Length: 149
Image 1 (cartoon, rainbow, N blue to C red):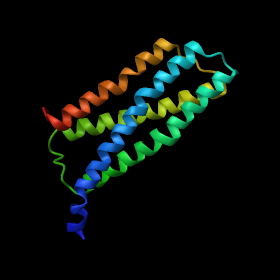
Image 2: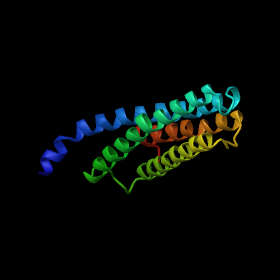
Image 3: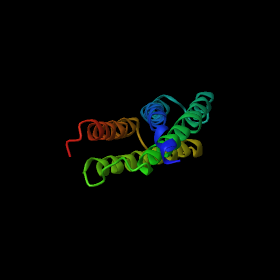
Image 4: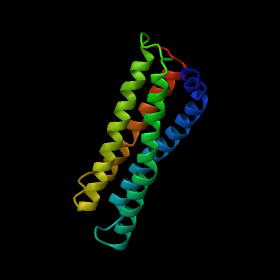
């Protein structure tokens, strides 16, 4: 059985990479939608409903499943025991993945603010928050590929 699980490793790794790409695409795009929703859309109008629908579908149809597959595939690879946890890089990656997951949920709460009609953040604040996943992605990729730590 163990040999079979290890034989799936390249497929799970490929699935993990594809899920990460999908998750990151959504995590980069949703705050941009929030910027335009905040700056260009009048609450309660047809465009408001359109933005809310786009934001909801991006989160529920793309981002949530991609995050779940990312986590599932990542945990599968961790369970195979191929990670050397005595090194620093997997711990840094894990912390950044947890931070990315927190950011994902933070975006979900901001979407609910728009639905409730009480979004408090400005377009500039959403632009600034959009840098969070970029920084986390850079740290994750360098940690995994370069392993400087």
